[in-house]
Image (cartoon, rainbow, N blue to C red; front, side, top):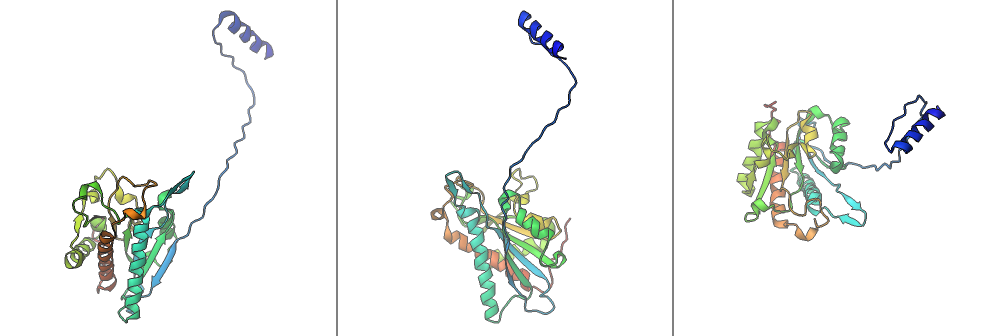
Length: 271
């Protein structure tokens, strides 16, 4: 074996050309993987329904509270993505609680859930869908709020808008309920651009409502679109349009309120 290698070496030196040498040998390779594990938690707020016949059905209102965090020396505040959605869900939760204190609580139970790990692949909502606290077959809908505090370039002259995604994918009634709530209370421009199944951005598949939709649960997703500060260190609270955000919060509440109080649960009438 040694002579074979040295012979090849000598020919390489004399002719100045590379030469291959094949020989049999046993090779042992060891690879070590260093990893760190970061644990996240979903945060749940539960308002039990007041109607004995309906309180075992559940309206889920979600937003993800995680963002990109700190990378090197850069801190990513995530004011729009998704502190805007998180704070909106907290306000909606408080509104349901105050209504119940006043003796006007929702007939169905309402679960307000802030999920973790969305930025890593919808992990928190995926976990809940796999290990639900309340039966998925009794879950009427997921109302998802992900970025509602900014204005994108397309609507710079009209901040009173919101993209609505997914409402008609499984239930035509969910779409109609949201439309009626808007025309009755908020009069926002409802933009369905990103609800198109051919949308190249595929936003329908990129937020936490999708893990409910995959289980056949109707879902609606409120989204203000991207902007120059999306996933940047410049996504700061001073750029939030709080007046716009409040109006969207009202729409989310009125839609959720109707879903929690109507006589019949919305029907799944689409594949």
